[in-house]
Length: 339
Image (tube, rainbow, N blue to C red; front, side):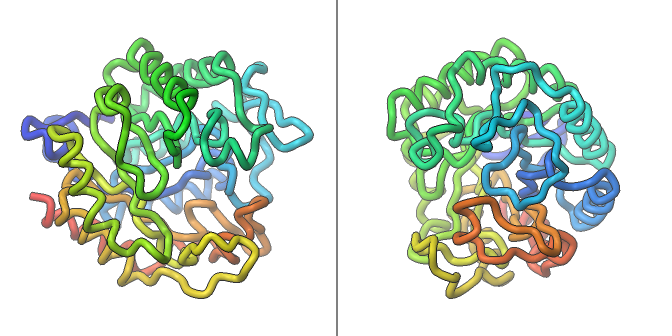
C-alpha cells in the first residue's frame, strides 16, 4: 500500500501520486470484536461502495460492545483497565497485523488511533475513568510497539482519540507522542482526532498536525457545526487539509447528555449525508468519514454497550445490519464537491 501524502495545493491528499479523497469508515473496534471471516466480508462490501480509509483504535475501544473476542494488547486488570507497561500480547498484535494486511489488499489505508482520551491524563474521559489513565512511559511503550507492528501497512496516525485539550498535562502527552512518531514513523501523516466541536488547538499541536481532522459529532443541540467548524478551523489554522473525521453516525441516538434516559431520536441516513455534504462545502475538502451505529462498536445480537455507553447509544443494530444502512451508499459520491 502506498502512503497518503499532502497534495501541492495543501487542500487535498495524494496516494501514490494520484488525487485521493478520504472516504473513511469508522470501525474503532476492529482489532477486538470481529472475526477474520467477518472482517473479510466487511472489507469487500465497503470496497464495493468506494470506501478507502478505515479508522481503527489500536487499543480496546472503551465504549465497544461486549462480549468481544476476548484477547487484548496488554494484560487486563480486575478493574477493566489495561496495563500498557506490561509485556505486549503478541497474539493480539499478530491479529492486528493480519487485519491491516487484509485491509491493504482491498485498497484501504488504516488510520490508527494511538492514545484515545481515556488513557491520557486531564481529559474528559480521564475524569470518568481515572483507573484507565497510563503513565507516559507506558504510553511510549505502546506507541513504539504499535508502530513497530503496523507501520509497514502505510497507516495514517491519529495521535489522539475523542480528546479535549483543557489540561496542560494532556497537551504535553500529545506533544510527546508527536515527537515520538517523528522518530519512529517519519514517513506517515500525523494528526489528532478531537472531541466534538473542538477546533482551538494549541499553536504547538497545530504545528505538529499534517492535516486537521475535526468532529462535528452526535449532539442534538449543535446542528450548525457542519457549517461552522470547518470554516473556523481553516481561519485559525490555514494552509493544511481539513476533513470531517466524525460527523453524526447513522442510527446513533441524538445525544443530550442525559445518559440514564432512553434515546428520543436517532440520526437518519439523510441527516448524516447532509452533515457530510455541508462540512465539505464549508471547507473540509480533504475527505469525510462515515459511521454506522452498531458497526463502529461491532455489535452482535445480544451484545451490550460497555458501561456508561449503554445509556448513550441505546441498543445498536447488529454489525451486519449496520453495514447495510442506506447512508453509506451515498458517501463516496460526495467527493465531487471537494474539487
